[in-house]
Image 1 (tube, one colour):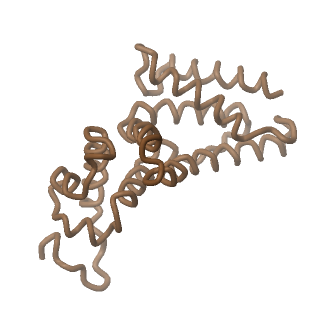
Image 2 (image 1 turned 135 degrees about the vertical axis):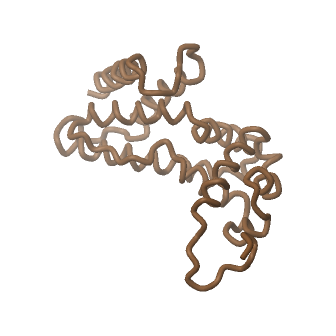
Length: 199
């Protein structure tokens, strides 16, 4: 049975095809941005039939969101037992993520949403949601432990940490997007500075 043949009842999903498609989604979007991102382009890159894509994903927005969620730079839950440890881990995950194709594509989607707000604004909301949920849990636990004051702004905290990591990823020539000693040291300095400001 070919890849494009209708899937029978109970037939398992082709995990290998899904993985190839998600890789192709990121590669195509990075090369072409939103304007050149099509099912045809993804199908060619992934070497799958176009019909297989249409059966699984309703449109290219859904395909893009699922690919980014599957390759999310914040896929690992964070709970180290302290707000400092949690935020350092968050900063390190962000640093690694921005060095990967999925993180770079997320940034491109965010920029494209400025040009195509009707098409992509809810997509960027989806991309930001997991990061916000992670930060909200960190803040909630920290307040309960007395490490952060009541009323601490999750949004502000996330902006401070993310902004510093993102600026380094975009502008530092020494940036590698991996957990090097320099990257860990940078994450620690950022977090300590943020915590001093919030407390």
